[in-house]
Length: 181
Image (cartoon, rainbow, N blue to C red):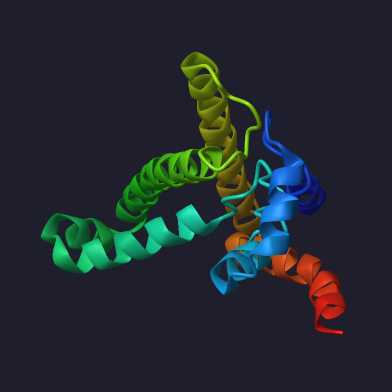
């Protein structure tokens, strides 16, 4: 059921988004970096959906924490403390994920918003409100995906984060094959 919610969330745009902007933007720009990101988000990026960030902030924060564990003796000690230390590192990773989600969604919302993503936002108050809505929505979407991944892992189905990535990549295969041919 979580995978169905993930696929539905990848189709729902952030409130206030001019959906025709992204369709035109991707039609005119075949940037391989955007295509790569779009594959990881299961098409959520080119729709600027609530899951546009996908699980990438969590993956990034996990990598950062692994590197910091080597560099910071206190984190290395936590890692060696067994289950309680790993739980504390997982908690720090979650907080770092939220921070990265806010930074990434803010950059995306401002960057694309300045190019017309949100339509006519002539007043500063309206522009701020639309940016705030986009940041909160995408951060919440990323946090929800992180939670889904952890629940999938806890229930013994497999690595939840990997399953979420896999379902997003598999969802793009039909579009990628049509583009190929």
